[in-house]
Image (tube, rainbow, N blue to C red; front, side, top):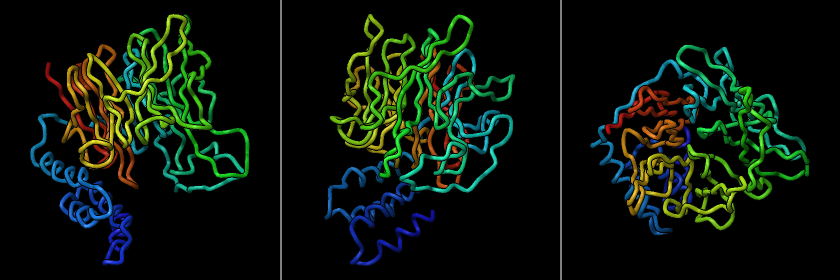
Length: 371
C-alpha cells in the first residue's frame, strides 16, 4: 500500500506527469481498487490508448461479484513463511522452488538491493530480498522437506522445474557472468536439463541449445510428459513484446528444433509459465483483459482465443505457475505476493483437484475440477 500512497501524491493536480497518473492507476488496479483505477485511467486516456485497462476494471468487478465455482483452500502442511512456488508432481512427491531453509523456518532478513558494477552478486543471499536463493526441494506427506538431489552447478537461483515420464528434468537457473566489466549488467535466466541414471542419480546439468544469457533470458521450462516438446518463456528478439512463449520439438537425433513462437497466446505484454495436458494449454499473461498483473489463462482445443480463469483462480496480483499432474488431469495453479508478504504455494489434494498459491494473502486455495 506504500506505493499507492506515494503515487497518489505524485499524481495530484493538473500538473502531474501523465506517467505518474498511469502508474497510480496500475497500482490501484493491482490493489483491487477497480473503480478508483478506472477513474485514473480515464484521466490518463488522452495520452495513450488505455481502453483495455479500463475494460479490465469493469470486467474484474463483474468477476469479483460473480466468481466461478472453483474452490480454494490452504494446504498448511506444505506452506511456510518463505517463498514456495511452482509445485510439480514427480515420482509421487511434490517438487517445488523455495527460498526457505531446509529443516527450519527461514529467518527473516532485511533485503538490500545492491548496485555493483565491479562485483558479482552475493552467493549467500538474494540482494533483492535478503533471503536465501531459490532452490529445489521435495516433500511427500510422510516426510519433511528435503533438498532435491540435484547438483545444479550454481550458487544462485534454481527453479522452477519440469519432468517428463522418462526421468528427464528441465529447470531454470540464474546466469551470473564470471567477467567483471565495470558496467551495469542484466541478470538473465537459462534452461538446463538432467537425466536420472539407473542408480537413481541425477546427471550433470546440460545447457539448453538456445541459451544466450548475454542477449536474452529463457526460463519457465515445461517439458511434455512424453519428453518430445519443450515450452518456455523468453524475451528473445522477434517476439510480440515482453516475455513470449516458445516451443522446441525434439528431433530424432535428440537435438532441438529452432524456437517457434506460440503466437496463439502471445501478446505485446508478458506471457509466462506454460503448461499443457490433454490438449489444454495453460499459461499466465498480463496482456489480456484481467484482474491485474499476471492472470492464469487456458486455451482449449478448438478455441479461437485464450480464456481467463477468473475469480477465485486469479487475483489482482500476479497469478502464475500452473503445474499439472503427470497423467494430465488437473492443474496446480499458484499466484504472487504483495510487497512485504511471503509467497505461498498451492498443491494437489486429489486427482481431480488443483491448488493455487496466493502470495498476497499467504493463503492456499483449492481449485476443484469435475470430469
